[in-house]
Length: 83
Image (cartoon, rainbow, N blue to C red; front, top):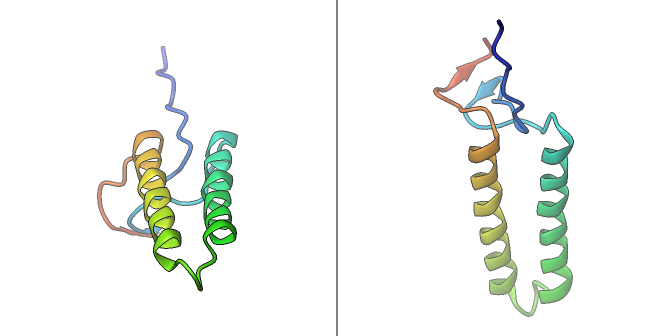
């Protein structure tokens, strides 16, 4: 009996280290929420007046995105050279 292959949201990149674009709809939802939070931070905080607020939201959103990629993505074990 064949084992079921895990359904990753984010595959490993072909070149380099990390994750590529999402391959499942859940991953695309995560990406839309990430970019939406950045857009919302820019609209709410106005970078000219409050750059710290925008940077804080950007940092928090990025940490959350990386955590989700590590949790639901394929495990990048080493630097990849296109193999």
